[in-house]
Length: 248
Image (cartoon, rainbow, N blue to C red; front, side, top):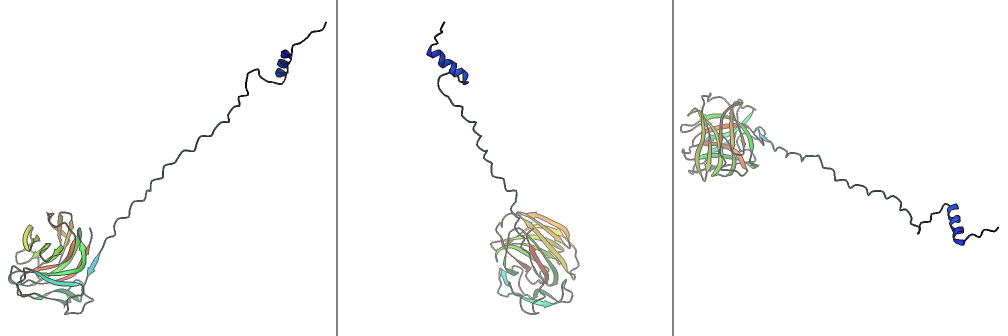
């Protein structure tokens, strides 16, 4: 007996034999896609900006010849009376760094006149300034000290020691008028050299005499940087040595 197979059955058999599928269509599997690489945030630079370098200067006055005013200094006055003091480089074997010092050799100024020697080319706001001071002659006044934030002859700060009054003071000069900011009583040998050091940061000013802290005041009137220099009053013929200035 002959069995007749339909054509559709033959096709089905062939598909099964070849491992095919009766499903319709030839849907192709898509290959797996690799994820896009993550974007890395830029690394932070751990390097801190370097702090501003300190600007330090020192004047020993030993390279100058005795007599003339040292190069780089300008002498002037607050409240000039028309009789300017005589400033000079002076030979002094007792100076902290021999052979020279710098100061006033003669002055006949009255009490309302202040004698200034300004270090040209200096400009400091916050400042650490020190100087050796030797009180000389003077009937109205003696001693002296450093000045800083000098805008001009009429605007600056002062720290001064006066052996006649046996005290030290901070002053401000504003528009040519002087006002006291603080005082400390001191009894120092007037014939000896003494160190005056001022550390002025912002509104805070500290005075050290012979390396001892003696006075602290606050004042923020003069904020802008200015020159530094040396100061005496009236007929105070004072000598200075080893002026040094830097930033705190």
